[in-house]
Image (cartoon, rainbow, N blue to C red):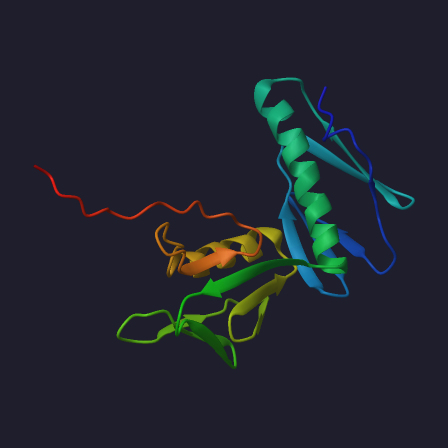
Length: 180
């Protein structure tokens, strides 16, 4: 029995659905999202709830049952309240500036790095902090990971881009010793 797949999803006010054969279109105040529904899972919308059941009990159906339910739940949460990731930029002279639908990073390289934001993603940038917002949880996480990969936090001085509550373990540098 899938514990996640058997949970019933409640539908908040202001959210509407368009159920096609292989996908579900979720519409809400923060935008529209499309969730692909696996063939092994059936979807029932009744009253103000959504219930997902698997058609058979084979391995693929069992694994896709909980996954599909969570994707639908994330889509509903995304179109109502949205998702966000917070990043910190640490280092002398490291900063970010918003320019329309772009972010311009100064990260200690000889050139500025221009990052184009994909459609559906909004960024709130201050000098040394950055918040990535959007309705699609997967896309928010992917954009945050790409931005973090521009200058990963290094363990010796701690400089770089990191998530807000990320702990970077610092290493001790080389020691100069007289080797006899």
